[in-house]
Amino acid sequence: MRRSFLALLSALLVTLGAAACGESTAPAPDEASEADVATSAEGEDDGWGLRNDPAAQRVEPFQIFDNLYYVGIDWVSCYLLVTTDGLILIGSLYGDFIDNAIDGIRAVGFDPSDLKYVLVTHGHFDHVGGAARFQEAYGARVGMTEADWELAEQPPSDPRYEIDVPVHDMVIADGDTLQLGDTEIRFYVTPGHTEGVLSMEFPVRDGGEEHRAFVFGGVGLNFEGVHRTNLYLDSVARIGRLAAEEGNPIDVNISNHASMGRIFERAEQLASRGEGDPHPFVDPQGFVDWLAELQRNAGEKLAVERELAGE
Image (cartoon, rainbow, N blue to C red; front, top):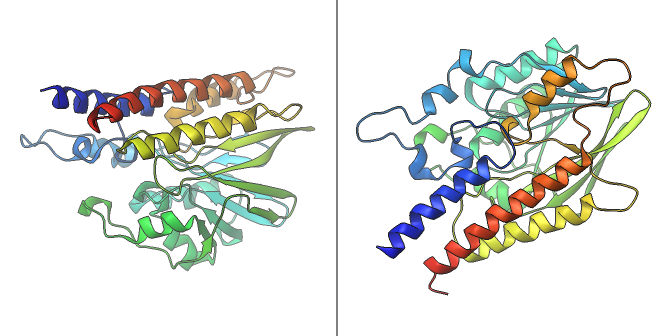
């Protein structure tokens, strides 16, 4: 009985991790346990239908900074980073939604054929599912960590998550950098959500001001075990140290699921921003507070995992 209760509590903490900093939405397959996303015996909708409803998922692409655009859908983010020497896509969506990203790139005034790189935060289908299309159609390089290349190349446990796997391409390691035109991206391997979560930082520009943006590549707590939970906690702590660098704080949170970083809420504020108003995405204290919430939720998960392991 006690073990069943702990398992239930662990599942609750998965949901807390997914909702750590954002509007409440149904847990995405990427952010919920496999059991949570399987169709129930009664045939009740588990959220999969809504997540794959073109009308429900449609988001008009929008500009966030001078060099950054949102071209994703409602439940999965995809960003277009513009440089003086070509385009970079962060995330690639999946299935029919790949066309949303392609159409979004065109809608904000750019040509998908100018894509140079697709950077994948981790190997779950909703982030890597479109990479092969961009690789084949536009010649874009695809980058992931080695661990998550291996994850993406494994057959999925659920046929709904099947994807066209991209050709094994760039292997990104901790501390690597990528320079394209006027933009440098610095990479960090931050395991937990998967074994090879890829996080990254890059400059974003607002007129004459430059800000330090960060993508934490794996926020969800849908994994098991003391070791993985400790890895997650270490990753969050490491990002916290980066955020606290004197004179160079991380002040923009670019989340790979929009609800986790208040992306749409901030976009609404941005749309009504007046001259001289602060940019709503620039929020260094908000980023620190968000990390603290992730740390608390993961700490609670660790206590449950230790109980389950008999420690």
